[in-house]
Image (cartoon, rainbow, N blue to C red; front, side, top):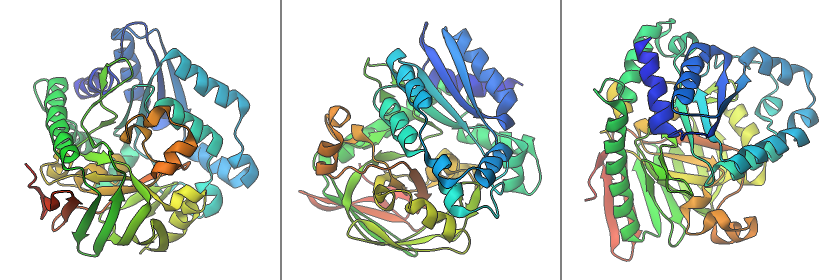
Length: 399
């Protein structure tokens, strides 16, 4: 129980940094009930005015996919849109607990329906959350997740690994995250100073060059909301990232970690890019569900994020594949297809969709991270100072 309480304290104090009188939206699964209760308790202890849990459940999602029509699965609901806007108006903190209780819950389902999303609601949620609210996404241990990793529901073993990744093993986990956040911020500042125009990832099966937007900002560690209050968007986080020019990506990449996507497990994923667009998909397993998601809207086939992670990552040091994108993406360099981060460019949050598109930012109802890093990965950046090594054989070398 002490571990769960430490977990909840990190989520509330280091993650969204709940302020007295603030509302909190908690997105969680029924598999996370005990942890969700601890997070609610920690939020109220921090002075939250209200906490609203929004529950999800794998078997209920399967029922929806099996029985609802594709149009119903894609239709945005006016009442849901209004609720999202009201959360934004009230300045609520936004917590999401992730960790699939059963990644195979949608095995055998129609892949197009399984990948369907209410695009209007997804975009409204992103518009409200990104750059306007303090938000965090955190992996919540559960027996189903443990079974994916170890082949048995060894929850204690999973908690041990999560404790390493989330720095719960430190005397003061919140202070430990504040120190790590400062280091990542320094890396972001060093990258900003280079004024890079493109980066290139190279490793076994990967040779991908991605163009960057002039003046883009690299974010590392925590962020500040519009009132200057610090928060951590993801826990754990070991990355420095930005949004690239969606029109400029060429080459191939090999995904080095399994991807849990729409209730399915994707392994051995390989992608080809031409002119900024994903033009071919191959995988040992799950290529159909990837293709289905890429077909959800035009922006889904373009990149919305490029990220740098080195081998000093706490997730890498945990020594396991978590089968959870939030964790595994922080074990190595990664990219994401789909939605860009408007805050990646100066003034981007206040821009119109047309202005963002003109700069090269991407718009999509999806945002899916895939890991391409690990042993052997190297990253270079090109800019006014020439081509510079950033990561060499998974080690950060940029001063």
